[in-house]
Length: 178
Image 1 (cartoon, helix red, strand yellow):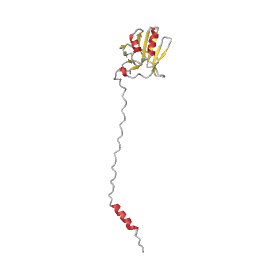
Image 2 (cartoon, helix red, strand yellow):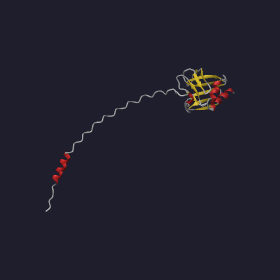
Image 3 (spheres, one colour):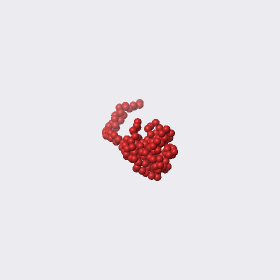
Image 4 (cartoon, rainbow, N blue to C red):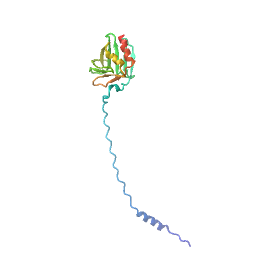
């Protein structure tokens, strides 16, 4: 005769064993992550502090144009107003260097050979311009054409223009001197 064991004692044994296991502690609540503070507004770009001869060029390119009043070269990004213009005024036998602006503060022009402050005047038009006038024999014009790598046009209250001395600059000067 075969004896069978009832499953009841086995089930009671498993339940009793489970009762001996300690209960797991409830998880500790995690504090929510703090909301990040909003980023501060960007500061205006500081004036370059390194040597001006290491400043990057102002974006753009020179473009030479032959006009009835005299040759001119414009510097800037295609499709935008020029950042600078060098124009021959044959009638006045002068060269005009201009940039957009509304203040007649003097320009400081720096080249590898010389630096000089130059008086300016305002010119009205669709885009107000600040204009410096040069006699055709002004040595600063030659210094701009033959500077090493770049020349700058600086004016208080405006970012400096850092311009390459490409052939267009010398061509306007030489064509105007004629």
